[in-house]
Image (cartoon, rainbow, N blue to C red; front, top):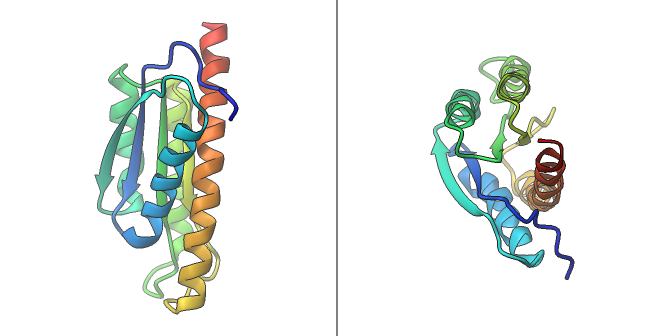
Length: 154
């Protein structure tokens, strides 16, 4: 087991959308599990839920401005529901998260998947649920690494 926790990490926020919760929660759970696997004194993690991915950037902004968090991890799934063009929502969410990160100088990691094609059948649900686990694990390792880099330069 590798210890990669920065010595002074205090708090990480995880924001998850409730839309497709059964899939999105796989990312949050994998993120938390991966933090535990890396030993050391894990940072405190505060978890927040929002209705959909579109609401994630505003909460991320408020959290980043609070000064309480060393990083914010955002989890969601933006799918093409056939009613509107999901590309607009996906772009707004991802651009919003980047803007928060740049404006606040707090790392904001995206585990917001925006698949081009998603269908409500078992094969796609299983595929994206499994992919969320992988992305949650990657986000945990990335989060710890980027927080450590930011701590070393400030």
